[in-house]
Length: 166
Image 1 (cartoon, rainbow, N blue to C red):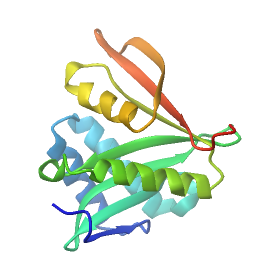
Image 2: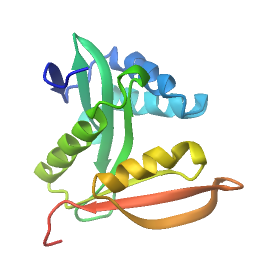
Image 3: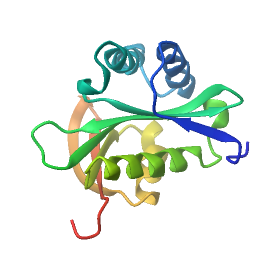
Image 4: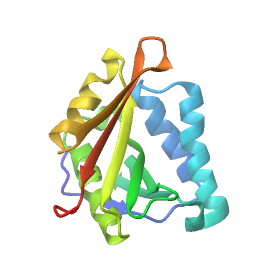
């Protein structure tokens, strides 16, 4: 896979909900409840528009969605944003698309006045590559909440300063 023929968009279309479901399911990382949550965020945007607080970046290749991010400002903060989702279609992983999506998302967040981006992930061994990904992308481990998702499954919270002076 080459990243040269990729198209990126921030507009949300009605059929994006199903495409997001396919991507999230393909990873093998998420439960059916989590897949439903990912879809609910797309539906929330379709229903309410940008005022819902969720924003998206979609990556497409040959007119097919192969990755996306969902992010938004954290309520009651001045300039902090959450990265709610980042996922790449399983067969397209390992070629740098996740890094590109995250970098482009950071640029969008900065253009929206964001100065800090937070990401969280699970502590299960399956998520070790995800934690390493965030660290390779310049995110710092800020907190580990033991037994958060389930006994023995911690929540890892990472953050990145998007403006060096912050």
